[in-house]
Length: 348
Image 1 (tube, rainbow, N blue to C red):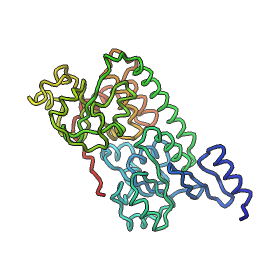
Image 2: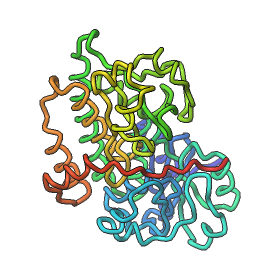
Image 3: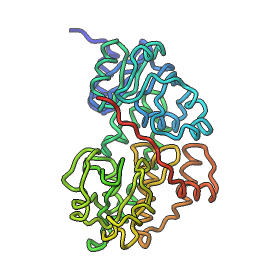
Protein backbone atom coordinates (compact mmCIF):
# COMPACT_ATOMS: atom_id res chain seq x y z
CA UNK A 1 0.00 0.00 0.00
CA UNK A 2 1.33 3.44 -0.88
CA UNK A 3 1.05 6.47 1.40
CA UNK A 4 1.35 10.12 0.47
CA UNK A 5 4.11 12.09 2.17
CA UNK A 6 1.46 14.20 3.88
CA UNK A 7 -0.24 11.16 5.36
CA UNK A 8 3.07 9.64 6.45
CA UNK A 9 3.94 12.95 8.15
CA UNK A 10 0.56 12.98 9.87
CA UNK A 11 1.05 9.46 11.19
CA UNK A 12 4.52 10.29 12.49
CA UNK A 13 3.41 13.48 14.20
CA UNK A 14 0.27 11.92 15.65
CA UNK A 15 1.87 8.70 16.76
CA UNK A 16 5.28 9.85 17.93
CA UNK A 17 4.61 13.32 19.27
CA UNK A 18 1.09 12.51 20.46
CA UNK A 19 -0.45 15.55 18.78
CA UNK A 20 -4.18 14.83 18.36
CA UNK A 21 -4.70 16.46 14.96
CA UNK A 22 -2.85 16.75 11.70
CA UNK A 23 -3.67 19.09 8.80
CA UNK A 24 -3.92 17.48 5.39
CA UNK A 25 -3.19 19.04 2.02
CA UNK A 26 -6.86 18.64 1.02
CA UNK A 27 -8.14 21.17 3.60
CA UNK A 28 -9.07 18.66 6.29
CA UNK A 29 -7.72 17.92 9.73
CA UNK A 30 -7.58 14.58 11.51
CA UNK A 31 -8.73 14.70 15.12
CA UNK A 32 -7.94 11.87 17.52
CA UNK A 33 -10.81 11.69 19.99
CA UNK A 34 -10.77 10.41 23.57
CA UNK A 35 -11.35 6.82 22.40
CA UNK A 36 -8.32 6.95 20.11
CA UNK A 37 -10.45 7.05 16.95
CA UNK A 38 -9.29 9.34 14.17
CA UNK A 39 -11.95 11.60 12.66
CA UNK A 40 -11.41 13.72 9.55
CA UNK A 41 -13.15 17.11 9.52
CA UNK A 42 -12.76 20.38 7.59
CA UNK A 43 -9.81 22.47 8.79
CA UNK A 44 -12.09 25.49 9.18
CA UNK A 45 -15.11 23.65 10.52
CA UNK A 46 -18.12 25.98 10.74
CA UNK A 47 -21.11 23.69 11.31
CA UNK A 48 -20.76 21.87 14.61
CA UNK A 49 -23.48 20.41 16.82
CA UNK A 50 -22.97 19.46 20.46
CA UNK A 51 -25.24 16.81 21.96
CA UNK A 52 -23.32 16.88 25.23
CA UNK A 53 -24.49 19.73 27.51
CA UNK A 54 -21.19 20.09 29.33
CA UNK A 55 -19.02 20.59 26.24
CA UNK A 56 -21.17 23.50 25.06
CA UNK A 57 -19.93 25.67 27.91
CA UNK A 58 -16.29 25.06 27.02
CA UNK A 59 -16.97 25.91 23.37
CA UNK A 60 -18.26 29.25 24.65
CA UNK A 61 -15.20 29.81 26.85
CA UNK A 62 -12.82 29.47 23.89
CA UNK A 63 -15.11 31.79 21.89
CA UNK A 64 -15.97 29.22 19.24
CA UNK A 65 -19.74 29.29 19.72
CA UNK A 66 -20.09 31.15 16.41
CA UNK A 67 -19.20 27.81 14.74
CA UNK A 68 -22.09 25.99 16.38
CA UNK A 69 -25.32 25.43 14.45
CA UNK A 70 -26.96 23.41 17.20
CA UNK A 71 -26.28 22.78 20.85
CA UNK A 72 -27.48 21.11 24.01
CA UNK A 73 -28.00 23.53 26.90
CA UNK A 74 -28.96 20.74 29.30
CA UNK A 75 -29.41 21.65 32.99
CA UNK A 76 -28.05 25.18 32.56
CA UNK A 77 -29.97 28.20 33.82
CA UNK A 78 -31.76 29.10 30.59
CA UNK A 79 -32.46 32.70 31.62
CA UNK A 80 -28.80 33.30 32.44
CA UNK A 81 -27.64 31.61 29.26
CA UNK A 82 -29.95 33.82 27.21
CA UNK A 83 -28.67 36.91 29.05
CA UNK A 84 -24.94 36.20 29.14
CA UNK A 85 -24.52 33.80 26.19
CA UNK A 86 -27.21 34.98 23.77
CA UNK A 87 -25.86 33.18 20.72
CA UNK A 88 -25.60 29.90 22.58
CA UNK A 89 -29.09 30.36 23.96
CA UNK A 90 -30.61 31.07 20.53
CA UNK A 91 -29.28 27.94 18.82
CA UNK A 92 -31.62 25.07 17.91
CA UNK A 93 -31.18 21.69 19.54
CA UNK A 94 -31.31 18.18 18.15
CA UNK A 95 -31.52 16.83 21.68
CA UNK A 96 -29.24 16.06 24.59
CA UNK A 97 -27.27 13.07 25.70
CA UNK A 98 -29.11 9.90 24.67
CA UNK A 99 -32.29 11.79 23.73
CA UNK A 100 -31.15 12.92 20.28
CA UNK A 101 -33.53 13.24 17.33
CA UNK A 102 -31.60 12.04 14.29
CA UNK A 103 -33.94 13.75 11.83
CA UNK A 104 -33.48 17.09 13.57
CA UNK A 105 -29.75 16.49 13.67
CA UNK A 106 -29.59 15.85 9.93
CA UNK A 107 -31.62 19.02 9.25
CA UNK A 108 -28.86 21.04 10.92
CA UNK A 109 -26.39 19.69 8.33
CA UNK A 110 -23.46 19.43 10.73
CA UNK A 111 -19.90 18.86 9.58
CA UNK A 112 -19.21 17.39 13.01
CA UNK A 113 -21.01 16.29 16.18
CA UNK A 114 -19.35 16.53 19.60
CA UNK A 115 -20.66 13.84 21.92
CA UNK A 116 -19.71 12.01 25.09
CA UNK A 117 -18.13 8.58 25.18
CA UNK A 118 -20.97 7.56 27.55
CA UNK A 119 -23.67 7.87 24.88
CA UNK A 120 -22.76 4.65 23.06
CA UNK A 121 -26.09 3.88 21.37
CA UNK A 122 -26.72 7.36 19.97
CA UNK A 123 -23.06 7.68 18.95
CA UNK A 124 -23.42 4.52 16.88
CA UNK A 125 -26.63 5.88 15.33
CA UNK A 126 -24.90 9.14 14.38
CA UNK A 127 -22.06 7.23 12.76
CA UNK A 128 -24.60 5.11 10.91
CA UNK A 129 -26.03 8.20 9.18
CA UNK A 130 -22.48 9.18 8.15
CA UNK A 131 -22.04 12.30 10.26
CA UNK A 132 -18.50 12.64 11.67
CA UNK A 133 -18.50 12.39 15.44
CA UNK A 134 -15.80 13.23 17.99
CA UNK A 135 -16.23 11.68 21.41
CA UNK A 136 -14.94 13.28 24.60
CA UNK A 137 -15.06 12.28 28.27
CA UNK A 138 -15.65 14.99 30.86
CA UNK A 139 -16.95 12.67 33.60
CA UNK A 140 -13.52 11.15 34.26
CA UNK A 141 -11.29 13.75 35.92
CA UNK A 142 -8.15 12.43 34.21
CA UNK A 143 -9.78 12.84 30.79
CA UNK A 144 -11.22 16.33 31.33
CA UNK A 145 -8.14 18.33 30.30
CA UNK A 146 -7.48 15.99 27.36
CA UNK A 147 -11.07 16.46 26.19
CA UNK A 148 -10.68 20.24 26.40
CA UNK A 149 -7.53 19.94 24.27
CA UNK A 150 -9.51 18.00 21.68
CA UNK A 151 -12.24 20.67 21.57
CA UNK A 152 -9.59 23.36 21.15
CA UNK A 153 -8.04 21.37 18.29
CA UNK A 154 -11.40 21.04 16.54
CA UNK A 155 -11.89 24.79 16.35
CA UNK A 156 -8.26 25.84 15.95
CA UNK A 157 -8.45 27.37 19.44
CA UNK A 158 -5.56 25.51 21.01
CA UNK A 159 -4.18 28.61 22.73
CA UNK A 160 -7.52 29.53 24.31
CA UNK A 161 -8.10 25.93 25.42
CA UNK A 162 -4.64 25.71 26.96
CA UNK A 163 -5.19 28.98 28.83
CA UNK A 164 -8.15 27.45 30.63
CA UNK A 165 -6.39 24.11 31.18
CA UNK A 166 -3.41 25.90 32.75
CA UNK A 167 -5.75 27.87 35.03
CA UNK A 168 -7.68 24.72 35.96
CA UNK A 169 -4.52 22.75 36.72
CA UNK A 170 -3.02 25.58 38.78
CA UNK A 171 -6.15 25.86 40.94
CA UNK A 172 -6.53 22.09 41.33
CA UNK A 173 -2.88 21.73 42.33
CA UNK A 174 -3.18 24.51 44.90
CA UNK A 175 -6.35 23.01 46.40
CA UNK A 176 -4.79 19.54 46.43
CA UNK A 177 -1.67 20.84 48.15
CA UNK A 178 -3.80 22.40 50.89
CA UNK A 179 -5.86 19.23 51.14
CA UNK A 180 -2.76 17.08 51.51
CA UNK A 181 -1.81 19.17 54.51
CA UNK A 182 -5.02 18.43 56.44
CA UNK A 183 -4.25 16.17 59.44
CA UNK A 184 -5.84 12.73 59.13
CA UNK A 185 -7.99 13.25 62.22
CA UNK A 186 -9.51 16.41 60.69
CA UNK A 187 -10.34 15.03 57.25
CA UNK A 188 -14.02 15.23 56.36
CA UNK A 189 -16.20 12.43 54.99
CA UNK A 190 -18.83 14.01 52.75
CA UNK A 191 -22.27 12.63 52.07
CA UNK A 192 -23.73 14.00 48.84
CA UNK A 193 -27.52 14.34 48.62
CA UNK A 194 -28.52 13.72 45.03
CA UNK A 195 -32.03 13.81 43.55
CA UNK A 196 -33.35 13.23 47.06
CA UNK A 197 -31.64 13.40 50.47
CA UNK A 198 -31.44 9.60 50.59
CA UNK A 199 -30.03 9.22 47.11
CA UNK A 200 -26.28 9.51 46.78
CA UNK A 201 -23.40 8.89 44.40
CA UNK A 202 -20.49 6.51 44.30
CA UNK A 203 -16.75 6.93 44.29
CA UNK A 204 -16.60 6.82 40.49
CA UNK A 205 -18.53 10.09 40.11
CA UNK A 206 -17.01 13.51 39.45
CA UNK A 207 -18.26 14.88 42.77
CA UNK A 208 -16.26 12.25 44.67
CA UNK A 209 -13.14 13.35 42.80
CA UNK A 210 -13.80 16.98 43.80
CA UNK A 211 -13.99 15.83 47.42
CA UNK A 212 -10.67 13.99 47.12
CA UNK A 213 -8.96 17.01 45.56
CA UNK A 214 -10.21 19.16 48.46
CA UNK A 215 -8.69 16.77 51.00
CA UNK A 216 -11.90 14.95 51.93
CA UNK A 217 -13.54 11.69 50.90
CA UNK A 218 -16.89 10.41 49.74
CA UNK A 219 -18.73 8.89 52.70
CA UNK A 220 -20.52 6.41 50.42
CA UNK A 221 -17.46 4.28 49.84
CA UNK A 222 -18.01 1.07 47.94
CA UNK A 223 -20.88 2.46 45.85
CA UNK A 224 -20.71 3.32 42.18
CA UNK A 225 -22.95 5.33 39.89
CA UNK A 226 -25.11 8.32 40.73
CA UNK A 227 -28.53 6.89 41.51
CA UNK A 228 -27.97 4.97 44.73
CA UNK A 229 -30.97 4.99 47.06
CA UNK A 230 -29.87 4.35 50.64
CA UNK A 231 -31.51 4.08 54.04
CA UNK A 232 -31.22 6.48 56.93
CA UNK A 233 -29.57 3.64 58.84
CA UNK A 234 -26.88 3.42 56.18
CA UNK A 235 -26.19 7.15 56.40
CA UNK A 236 -25.74 6.83 60.17
CA UNK A 237 -23.41 3.87 59.64
CA UNK A 238 -21.25 6.03 57.34
CA UNK A 239 -21.46 8.88 59.90
CA UNK A 240 -20.40 11.65 57.49
CA UNK A 241 -18.76 14.73 58.97
CA UNK A 242 -20.36 16.94 56.30
CA UNK A 243 -23.47 16.78 54.13
CA UNK A 244 -23.49 18.53 50.77
CA UNK A 245 -26.84 18.80 49.01
CA UNK A 246 -26.53 19.11 45.25
CA UNK A 247 -28.66 21.75 43.47
CA UNK A 248 -31.03 19.12 42.09
CA UNK A 249 -31.86 17.84 45.60
CA UNK A 250 -35.35 19.07 46.60
CA UNK A 251 -34.43 19.36 50.28
CA UNK A 252 -32.82 22.51 51.63
CA UNK A 253 -30.14 22.87 54.28
CA UNK A 254 -32.86 24.04 56.65
CA UNK A 255 -34.95 20.94 55.89
CA UNK A 256 -32.09 18.63 56.86
CA UNK A 257 -31.20 20.58 60.00
CA UNK A 258 -34.86 20.53 61.14
CA UNK A 259 -35.67 16.91 60.22
CA UNK A 260 -35.76 14.70 63.36
CA UNK A 261 -34.51 11.74 61.32
CA UNK A 262 -31.20 13.54 60.73
CA UNK A 263 -30.82 15.17 64.16
CA UNK A 264 -28.36 12.70 65.66
CA UNK A 265 -26.00 12.72 62.69
CA UNK A 266 -22.60 14.23 63.51
CA UNK A 267 -22.72 16.57 60.49
CA UNK A 268 -26.11 17.91 61.57
CA UNK A 269 -25.06 18.36 65.18
CA UNK A 270 -22.05 20.37 64.02
CA UNK A 271 -24.15 22.23 61.42
CA UNK A 272 -21.87 20.99 58.66
CA UNK A 273 -24.67 20.88 56.08
CA UNK A 274 -24.21 22.86 52.86
CA UNK A 275 -25.75 23.28 49.44
CA UNK A 276 -23.52 23.27 46.37
CA UNK A 277 -23.85 26.63 44.56
CA UNK A 278 -24.79 27.04 40.92
CA UNK A 279 -24.75 29.83 38.38
CA UNK A 280 -24.86 28.95 34.71
CA UNK A 281 -24.66 25.31 35.75
CA UNK A 282 -24.26 23.46 39.01
CA UNK A 283 -20.69 23.82 40.21
CA UNK A 284 -20.06 20.12 40.71
CA UNK A 285 -21.04 19.02 37.22
CA UNK A 286 -18.16 18.34 34.77
CA UNK A 287 -18.23 21.85 33.32
CA UNK A 288 -15.69 24.70 33.52
CA UNK A 289 -17.50 26.06 36.59
CA UNK A 290 -16.62 22.87 38.49
CA UNK A 291 -13.31 24.40 39.52
CA UNK A 292 -15.37 26.90 41.53
CA UNK A 293 -17.16 23.97 43.15
CA UNK A 294 -13.79 22.54 44.17
CA UNK A 295 -12.63 25.86 45.65
CA UNK A 296 -15.98 26.45 47.37
CA UNK A 297 -16.06 22.98 48.90
CA UNK A 298 -12.64 23.36 50.47
CA UNK A 299 -13.52 26.85 51.72
CA UNK A 300 -16.61 25.65 53.62
CA UNK A 301 -15.31 22.36 55.06
CA UNK A 302 -11.80 23.60 55.88
CA UNK A 303 -12.17 27.39 56.33
CA UNK A 304 -9.22 27.57 58.72
CA UNK A 305 -6.86 26.10 56.11
CA UNK A 306 -7.68 28.08 52.96
CA UNK A 307 -5.81 31.25 52.05
CA UNK A 308 -7.89 32.36 49.06
CA UNK A 309 -10.92 34.65 49.08
CA UNK A 310 -13.73 32.63 47.50
CA UNK A 311 -15.59 35.77 46.39
CA UNK A 312 -12.53 37.06 44.55
CA UNK A 313 -11.99 33.66 42.94
CA UNK A 314 -15.57 33.61 41.69
CA UNK A 315 -15.50 37.15 40.29
CA UNK A 316 -12.12 36.63 38.61
CA UNK A 317 -13.23 33.34 37.06
CA UNK A 318 -16.40 34.69 35.45
CA UNK A 319 -14.70 37.84 34.23
CA UNK A 320 -11.74 35.97 32.74
CA UNK A 321 -13.54 33.10 31.03
CA UNK A 322 -17.19 34.16 30.65
CA UNK A 323 -16.72 37.91 30.17
CA UNK A 324 -19.17 38.50 33.04
CA UNK A 325 -18.55 41.15 35.70
CA UNK A 326 -20.03 40.12 39.04
CA UNK A 327 -20.29 42.32 42.12
CA UNK A 328 -20.06 41.16 45.72
CA UNK A 329 -23.86 41.34 45.81
CA UNK A 330 -24.08 39.10 42.75
CA UNK A 331 -21.90 36.53 44.48
CA UNK A 332 -24.05 36.75 47.60
CA UNK A 333 -27.06 36.05 45.38
CA UNK A 334 -25.33 32.94 44.04
CA UNK A 335 -24.77 31.67 47.58
CA UNK A 336 -28.34 32.45 48.64
CA UNK A 337 -30.03 30.91 45.58
CA UNK A 338 -31.34 27.58 46.82
CA UNK A 339 -33.86 26.92 44.07
CA UNK A 340 -33.82 23.36 42.80
CA UNK A 341 -32.64 22.67 39.28
CA UNK A 342 -33.93 19.81 37.17
CA UNK A 343 -31.31 17.32 36.05
CA UNK A 344 -33.22 15.08 33.70
CA UNK A 345 -32.13 11.49 33.58
CA UNK A 346 -31.81 10.47 29.93
CA UNK A 347 -33.71 7.48 28.68
CA UNK A 348 -31.63 4.48 27.77
